[in-house]
Image (cartoon, rainbow, N blue to C red; front, side, top):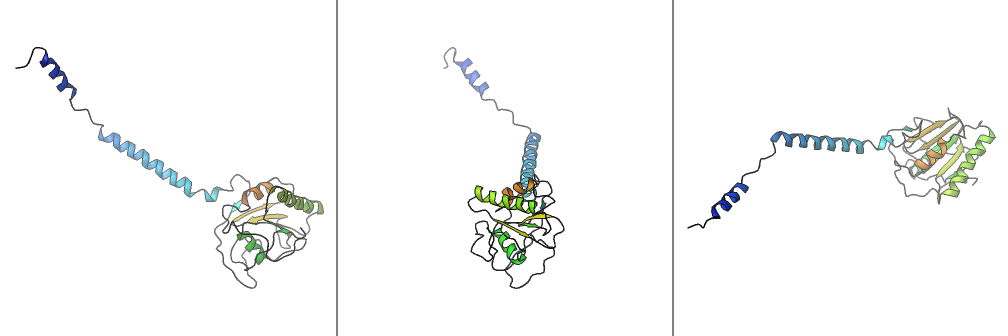
Length: 207
């Protein structure tokens, strides 16, 4: 027989075990929808990082993947300054050249992460010297700068900077975008062989 005062304690215990209310089904649908949208936006952002790498440099053009491969002999490129594609098995040594260089070898240098600065032969001498000093400055600031500087006869623009899949056309050697391009695209994000050297190939640059 229960003692006096015991029954009220039992009632309180039973009351505390009453089932809790479950979260409505529609709330779970809302949470699931939010997570799905966040996942889709995240994947979209990651998938579009490649084409936007040059957006902060005005005028930079990101080009489609040109493919690659070693080909002996002359190659007929679709443009005067190819930003990749098939190329000669031997790369061109990086440096400053006073005479035009062979495109097929330069493209191999681009595959290694080099930036090719081509300029019109008629560019004023002070502009040429400014470009050369830019290359020298890169050498002082980098352990192994990868830059090919050379005149090119059939340029439509005074100065054209090219890396693998990336290009910038300019009118003046004092343009600040030259330094930005060199910092961004030497061994840049599209470089097929970023650890390769730009020496030990062919060519005898002035420096």
